[in-house]
Length: 116
Length: 114
Image 1 (cartoon, rainbow over the protein chains, first blue to last red):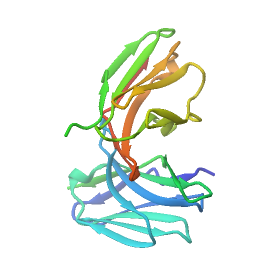
Image 2 (cartoon, each protein chain N blue to C red):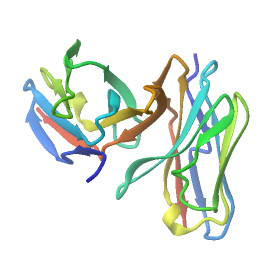
Image 3 (tube, helix red, strand yellow):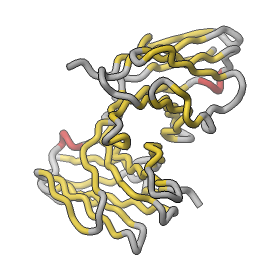
Image 4 (cartoon, rainbow over the protein chains, first blue to last red):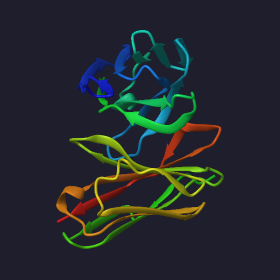
């Protein structure tokens, strides 16, 4: 089982719709969770981080975390063509003492296409 | 403030040649990460440094790969000898101690080994 799993897509949504991106992880010791956006030919760009169960909203983006289900998601409201990109889920795992190593494990990414 | 700087942006070389990739982290950041990205394997962590000291190199694929960080503002990733399967995009990222998981990526070096 991969440590971080994402549906590779492509996920296609119409402009103005809600795009829902999902990610599951295998290590229950995971402490922090990130969503990166990567445009074709560009580097990953951090768009959301979430550390505790529940929802975190930032503009049109909402990250949701459920540690019991080992599940993290990203919702994009009012999707725009400029949101078309690959979205990478990343997970940070702490050591037994609870200290973060700083290492991130990335999923394979979900390709999102928003069509006009 | 300048972001992470990588050079060269593109590198084409022949199998067996030595390749050196360079990275300048964001000033004040004390963590530096080297990643490799391919279609097949996605984004993989190769090695990371804290305060110029290598902390975890378990992702380095084999002895042909080496990385150094001689000072806080410069790191290199060297492949010697290079092979076609090393063709990938290599990213450098940096972060700050208090938020070490929040990593900022450089533009990447696109490497093609013929």
